[in-house]
Image 1 (cartoon, rainbow, N blue to C red):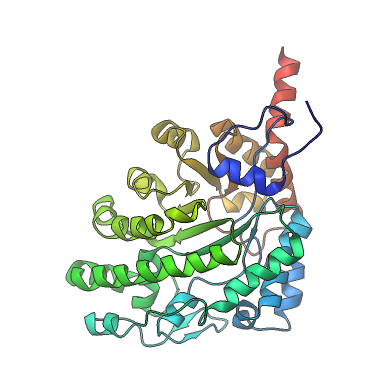
Image 2: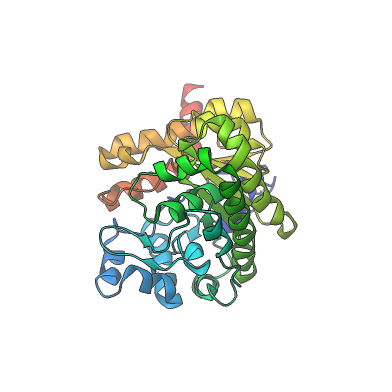
Length: 362
């Protein structure tokens, strides 16, 4: 056996594609990153945020690159996700975006079919070029051996925000429109899907090694509603990216009730929340689809030994194969940095710890 080791990028991509480790490499491990890892729990991010508004950071490639890279420096995560916001797509489609302290607000929300027809089909190389430029700046800084993840909202989630006009946890208006004006919602989802595919292709062209769709509001849909409305739109985005050869990750909150439909999207990786049992998901899906997740973010607020235990248990449920360790949703702002570090380190050493324990038992 040689002393060669996989780069973080090779490790991450192998996990996305459910591939075993090469025979000439040391024992494999699980790659680890954290949703919302570039953010408020980090003092380094707070220092940048004290000088710049949220949207200024998003739209200034050098600043976006800096805060994107901070978790790599501080936590030694195995992937960098570009710092941006899912609502920049809605803004580029024609809904003015403001981000006060109370939360993002979209002006002129979509409330009828006429509102859908007013939306723009924007050019991501122009209107949202700052995202691609941030990815290029990240690559220039970190080199070729660390993967970069691009992202966007899944169609239903972005539709919810575009209908509601804000992000404060209530999507009752969007659900009412789905029931009362299904044609309007379908057309909105179709427009979003086509736009999102172009937006993500631009991120891939800029250097993203994988792209993730965030479906925060999938939990508000019944399985039947998901199959009828969200599944076709999400599948359209994922299919449009197939020829790029880039792993496509789909995160859905409320994933347990939608697991079979999620598998039908064609995603290479399903990122599941903490209410989805990883062992059950692996049993149901088999080895053709990779899994990402799924530790409850609130565990990282507690005892560091419990953090390590949760990371080890998550890896144990998949055996480490085709698994990217992550949280089941975004890291909470009051998470101690020491606990985030412990989570990453525990995940990266989980398989080795299991082998050592097995050896002692023998």
